[in-house]
Length: 483
Ligand code: DUC
Ligand code: ZN
Ligand code: ZN
Ligand code: ZN
Image 1 (tube, protein in one colour):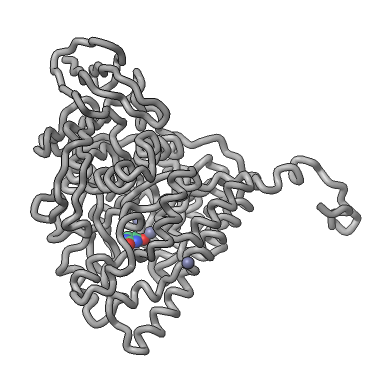
Image 2 (image 1 turned 60 degrees about the vertical axis):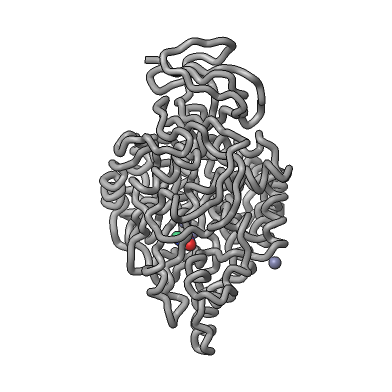
């Protein structure tokens, strides 16, 4: 059976043109004029784009004494409803747990996925076992390893562990990811705030100012350079972190920054809402920032210094958030966004002129497909690519509300926002999973996407010349000439 998408305008990361798309066996088999097929989808007035890829989700994740409330079923249903056709979730070993053991748990959870998915593996502790298992993980098609520089006493790894793991990534051709916040300083500032009686959700923001993120981002960049690996910085939320990324890229380092749709569109005033639930529902790390930081992130998307827009989707119910009444450090960190990322970015970015349609496709899909080594299977409208597509209706509007969302939680951080630009159809490997707001997907349709490693480099880009030119060594072993 073939499917044809007719009368639409194809929008990719670099081209906009009118053509039909013919699909068979889950893949695009032809792009051209006046194509014929069995099932006909009308894209008049619409843009045909690569489906979104959200590279940062936490589905059914054990965290802060509970589990995030969207699992692979509700999470991927939300994704498709908003035009996202693939997620990359974090397999998270608890410290002491083997990586392959954690992977088995994530394999089991993900059997319910409605759309394709992949995993990043988290390195939450360090040992010879972890070192060895990283190779098995790469052989399983996972080429990215996540490191937490925060969550002291739980998930955080120290600099020596970061350096060891980054060097291992370099050997394996894998890319390290970092949650960049200085966990020692966050722990100290949190304890002080609590001791002074600052127990409410707004203290969460005070405990993690932009400086802790800027410092950790810069530190991770330098460590990655010494290890000779590229680096992907998740949830870049402020100018201080963005500045470190810009500087690194100007110096020729492969460093990628990932702002979240939440940080682009919601600001720190949310924490000063008189309603405790309102504020606590928005507690995530890093916290929302002020408007100057938002402007910095938008500028990064337009200029290319920031590469990807994600969600860090980690949804907790109001009941779960209330674990932190009387102690903000016990509010489970996380917000949702899977269903709203694409419509919110389109409405606040493309409709305002802050980013172009092609930049929209780049930052929601194509860039991450390239960085994570799955392009052009994903992130492309090309013959031979998977038919993960969204037929996007730029005239369709709605008001975001928890009452009509796919997510399992009881609120939405974007509640009341008007969006214009929504999917008419969302296709997962050629199958229509969403049609005009009606979900038609099938649980278990999603498949694991294996991602091959890149070419191992293992040499600092900033000192390339120095290392390739052997220097004379003195009798004492100290180089005879300086740099
Ligand atoms: N930040 C969150 O807000 N939730 C999940 C993990 C994280 O780093
Ligand atoms: Zn994080
Ligand atoms: Zn600042
Ligand atoms: Zn995260």
